[in-house]
Amino acid sequence: MTGVIRHFIEKYIVTTVPNAMSACLDCKVVQCTADEWETCANRLARKATLDHMPIDDKSGSDAEA
Image 1 (cartoon, rainbow, N blue to C red):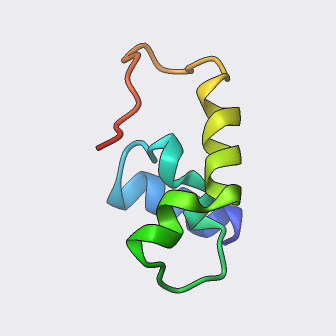
Image 2 (cartoon, helix red, strand yellow):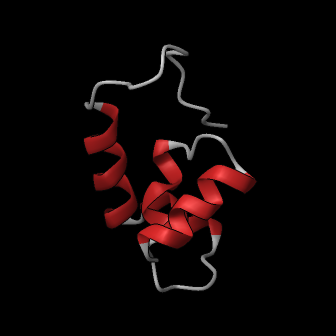
């Protein structure tokens, strides 16, 4: 997904994209099963990277469900 679309989603649909879902915005798979989502190497790698990055806002939370 392009940066423009990502920006639109972050601005108008959700304020913060949870780290666990960040890679899903760029994925070309239209729909995953729960098992595929749980074991997705791309998603887990992106989440791990983002979890170790400093948080820009002062909320200090990652809106994970």
